[in-house]
Length: 634
Ligand code: PEP
Ligand code: MG
Image: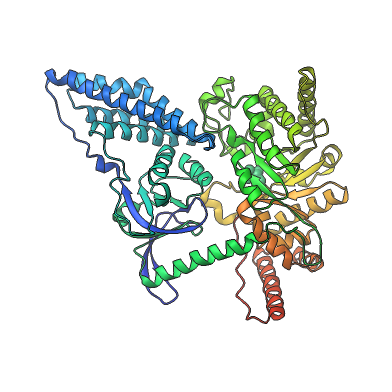
């Protein structure tokens, strides 16, 4: 379990110290930069009473500040690059909506008049009032939106303060080759974009005190690829302006003022990471196969259409999982059929005939739609009895259950996916199936969507295969109906682990129980691969286990020939497969099947890696490098 926001000493191999903060790494990579602190306290909010005769003047100041921010947001929206992630516009629209809400723009004017206080004071009183209302809502998504309200108010306060200069203008002076690391309490996605334009190449990464898995900032940071650490509770106390900091996103750590030895160590690591990346890139064009020549399909998981660039860049054999729900999130209007078609077709065309597996909407649990988006289509579901929060969101109306409950939503998406099938090689993947009737209903919806397209005389590939995700233990234990009715299977190990071990994968309190190598999980995976393959159905793994170097040999040994993962992991897995012998992997899987303790299984996998490493180095005449332990969590 990761402890967030704890300050620790950082020890280098030589025993020297630095200060270390722990948070949650958002994107991959390590960077070194000069800290630039962005603190709301810099806004210097003055609070004082005014004379009745000054009311008009104060109200005018407020009106003016609101108008300036309105113009600022409009300008930011107009400046959004055509290829920017769509959520960027959605964030700006959300902030514009908040700005225009009467609770924020009208109520402070009344406070100025009735309480005779200055504009800044009135605005901050109202901010706290609105945030309290948000924070009392029993819905994590809503609660986290209070951050958006704060960010909008901060913009207005900056204008009231006379238009604070751009944070980049106040940034510390950089030496040749140095870059900035922004340290903030919270950052709005629009701010990140702003800073990127403002600072071009001088921005290396950022650290925020707030932030968690559902924050907009995290979503955007991932798609922009900036190394970042969020949830570093005391960052602005521990870090001073201009401090040299290391942002080690892979390890979720920030090292403050590293000494020469630590700095040299991180520079060496960055160099090694860079060299390893360029070595791996040489494998891009090579066909993926094992040492004994078994061809393996390596596909990429993507979240947004523009991620297809990363898939192509990694030389993926296809897109093995397009998580379409991200197109639906963080926006107030659901994407239309045409908009969805454009997104899916863009990916299908870019992959130039390579397969693209488009998963139907997996909304629910930790992936929620905006309330206004739901309302715009008359979607009323809030969870449970509809009166309050869902009792168990991960076990609630999610994925195929959601789609079957809202037929129009499902049909619209199916038509869009089918239309995109005329532009490339598209496969349809249905998540979270457990019951025969769910499979049958899903197939009936596909048939109905095809009929509708025929009536409209719109093109689609009538033979686009429909497959199912195996991510509920009940599905893995009752594969017959899946094999009879579907054309391919994809193992969603992230959820299979969650549901087999009865732990919420988003709950850090039970994260220590998240065990991909639990024998029960391995049996479910092995059963699915064996049964599906014997029946002649392609079976892939698209959960995080597929990209985990510690699990690759075991999955290969279980008979897996199709892996789909984050594009960043693909070339390392390809490299690993070149070293593996499928028959030896099969023997390893058989040995592991007799073990009942994940620790013993992990040790067996490590022993196998070590003996291969030793064999490889004997062959190359080098000294063996210590094997890296197989990771426990995806
Ligand atoms: C999974 O559950 O393994 C999976 C790939 O789907 P997601 O992570 O989107 O739930
Ligand atoms: Mg899943």
